[in-house]
Image (cartoon, rainbow, N blue to C red; front, side, top):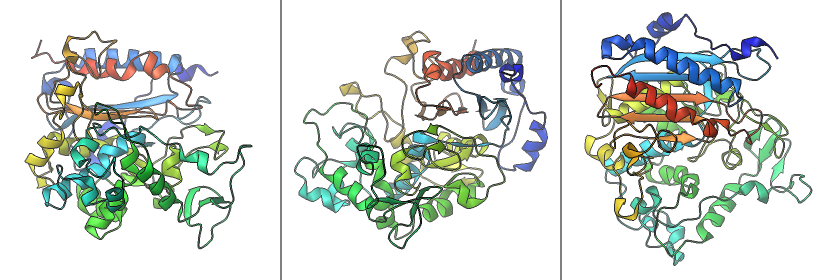
Length: 433
């Protein structure tokens, strides 16, 4: 294996890159009261150790302080063959970070516009639940805070595979057809009505009688359809028109292969179950793939720079670059812990620090122990992480493809890399020391 694999790569085009993107200003860490030498040495060491231990073949870190990018660095390669270096403009599969960057801003806007109420039964809007005794009274607040008792996850891939691993032709075919238009991968097309089958299974899924914190991504599979029903507009179009385009976030998109982005797209897993190929330009998550790559649980792709824009919008309580997208009241509601009395740390859709996180050792904390209780964000299965801290005015973005070549690679978690990196930027605050 080439020695280059273990050498972190900093692209020297950082300044010119900044000038080509007019939305985010850049600043030196020292201008924001941060110790630049400490940041670079510690971050380089943590990332290099991660690459050396095969936590990921490459990664990038972007941090904004007081609305300006003070650190953006790329490390390693797209894959372990060390052929394609990671670039600052590369686009990543965000996995579950999609939840807070696609359906959530739309839901927040709908709450803002009084088209959704957090505290009436969700069945008011999602009619199939009116017939489900265990679901008809669940509220959107309970659902978004993972307090509703919903089943955590359903593996829908099992519905389209035979016991011998072959595809069921009634659900997936190798060529497009008027009844098979949802594309999951090259030469893989899913039956149009399979989405309705997924919805029926979700609608009939069991609900726990015990109402306590239980993470569930199920409703994020149906939120896009709900958003379309309430807005009368295609989910992707609604997000693009109301958020991504006016923010200048061109890489925030589903199915990037359709958009012909000039950016390189970092591959994820060598899929041995469904696609039997290296997953690149297509969503990694199988449930999202079966929906044609467009979902609320996963499917969104982005560069670190564009992801930071949306996190800055949240950190600024709904405003970005002089334009207000959401009311400060609704953003503050969504980023607040909802059920602390039930030992539930979650906001509405947003993840929050562990309760008592500031008292924990680094190895036990999530996220950084020095992150404020007001901070919020989300992690993604592919190895992504986005976090905003309104009190410290700190946005932290970490992007990697830790599932390459296989999702069994868990060194990212074992080495606690994201938490350790996040802590560096809090520790580097000279004025706060």
